[in-house]
Length: 183
Image (tube, rainbow, N blue to C red; front, side, top):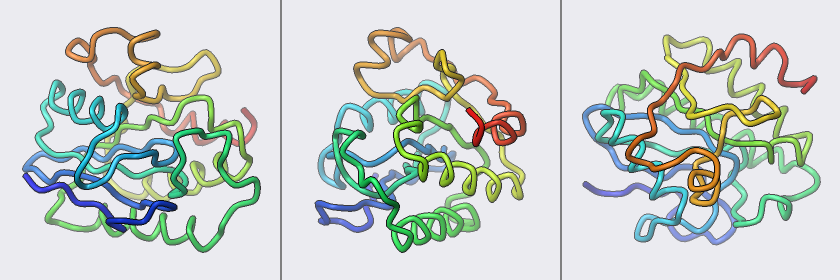
């Protein structure tokens, strides 16, 4: 299957990365790191494996912020509203695209959502929008601070266990959205 990546070769931003299947899982993480349409990184390796273990042959990865960095603390201090708005628009387009038939969403951004106010605001806007669709929300585990775990190699290996044993769990999106901005 072909990997899609938009934009394909931009070292600064990435809106979407995925592999289309018949049963597709939408995954929302924090920010893109080094993965491209040609090369996975640790997170996308885990995304693909966990999706497969849970019965998904396709996956599409979005992030709260499209800004690329392997170090979330290096994300811009102030939000780039143009990029964030475009990110939400592209996400909405995927939800509405019948070719992808998105019905399930895995939320996976971890505690680094707390590092920048705009990340929490972006999550809130995205979740409010996604709740307007008939979607099922999943996570792999809650962090101690109540956020959905990020699927990085380090996080999975240290706190969750073997990828082959990870079962997606229902995520209470109504409760989380209601409390997100005060967490």
